[in-house]
Length: 513
Image 1 (cartoon, rainbow, N blue to C red):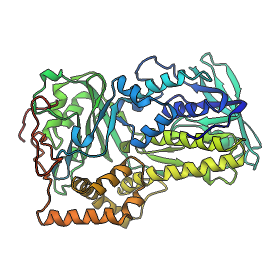
Image 2 (image 1 turned 135 degrees about the vertical axis):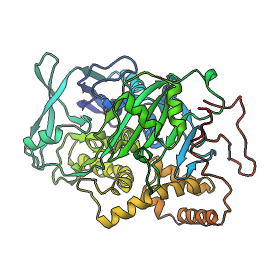
Image 3 (image 1 turned 120 degrees about the vertical axis):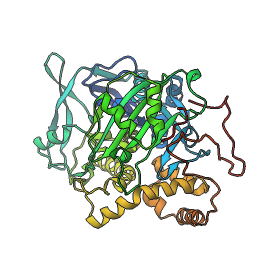
Image 4 (image 1 turned 180 degrees about the vertical axis):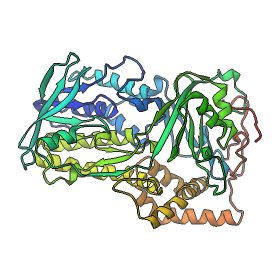
């Protein structure tokens, strides 16, 4: 973040105390004399689920761009998360990937991830926020409206917030800046319309994604067979066009979190998902890889089955208003909500908070110049993950919304999206430039357009396909998915290294289909 110009005597109000709200509060604290966070829930002292974040029961990633953004806002965040139980892993070495034609090989890469639960991430963020003396968190209160002047005019401004206490009493809190971090269900857009602003334009695309998760306590490491080397297990949808169980269409994860636990998650586009323990386990039995269900059964279920359907992409385009409200910014899902499959939400929210910090540092007053500068920079930041979400979700005939693609384009996207993804990951194992570029795109450091217009990237991809056709690739792939994923390390393709008993990590016994 850039150097700050403190707004003496000013108050900022943040609506919502989840990731987007906490990151926003963190950037406002050095620049406002007073920052008040209004949160509907009573926030737990530890890493616990709460009503306002139902998605916390599913796997969550903080992408590299998000890790850097949060670390900028809260120095030491990453170290604190790891100290609390988060795991810094290299997915290409620590995860087993079931791809189009079988298990992919293990190989070192530049991509790393911190694995933890959403509830642990929020607990660590709350601890960081509570260390800042200018921030007050009011819990158990519900935002119910805005106070405004001149709605819809060039000088129209949000001046504060109305909220209800737990006893039902309504209060008003004046604020020089209000941050909407209420999530995809935010009512701020409606409150603005009631105050005289035109409807905020929305871009939408709902590809009917549903996903379902259950938590498991894993067996002690000493009780796991030596061929269970992986930490994270991933199965991508099949590319088989012949008859097959619908479960082969699932994107499935056995996702590690702190406390030696894992979240078994299965999701799909347009398929009804199981929501009871018995149907959840039966669906896992029909996945492409028997390893998944076997690993689930090696653990002990510690939760019910949790199902989520609210997964549509929605971008509220405040930047397209002729006269956007002064004194208001929206961040996180309240501004732009993504299909959660793509793990972009928390990172995009943190990036928007950093944008807010930088724009505040450059403007001495919260005028139209400040508002327009924030909206323009936030749009540029959001365009990167939005394009990635559209690249996949526009390929389905049943998708609905303003961003539905023409039929010819849907057919092409449906046929090529997963094959292209698998081709990129295969080429990345043999071409450093392809790997580094793909890592940057996956982590929101480059756009999809940047990648596809990079001549060196395209050359590396085509070269790999030619070598594959000629049988001249150096790193093997396509290992039988009916067996356990192989643990051989192909970081040096000419000298593959078999896993040793000491280095082996947790899986299932060899199971033939």
